[in-house]
Length: 243
Image (spheres, rainbow, N blue to C red):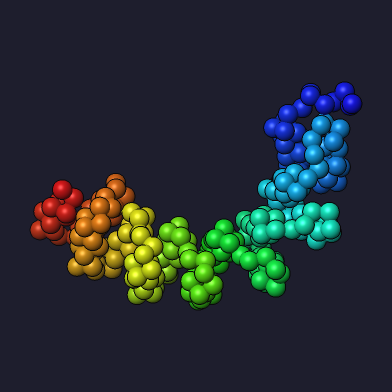
């Protein structure tokens, strides 16, 4: 038995692996991974995903993807491994690479999960690709992977930011129709931008809906309302809504 066994915990090993990756010593990180047995740890699928994660965390996504493709016989890829690589490209802002890898996922036998969609949709919205984002949102329902509230919020906020409020309201209606209950962040995105364009009747409708659904406004909601005040006579109305 190696003298190293028992000297390291998985946590200690993980710190070492991340130190190599953060120092941009990719070859050393991979070599350290294959020394796991010397520390009494298995070289298994989950450990391999840890290596991919460490490499992607420190922007060595190209190396992580190379390993992902070249070690498929040794470590059969699943959707989580693919998510790690996709997220790596998206975090780096490499949308072209993210799109390429997304299409690789679609062509594979692995079905995208909620996290896969969430990663890619977030990246698309940041890049302003809202048409593609909305199509992907609709495809999620069709493919039996309904979007969750954070994904819906991401799309609604991006649409509102681009002043596409009718489209954002359509996503909001779709949420209600599909029984995907909006949270306070959903309402805040709409309220913020409706206040900016002075559609106060719509704002008050949303506030009434929040009350009926038991979704309490927060400090951010009230901040948007108070910032919307243009005339002194509007103040009592706003204060009444805040009670």
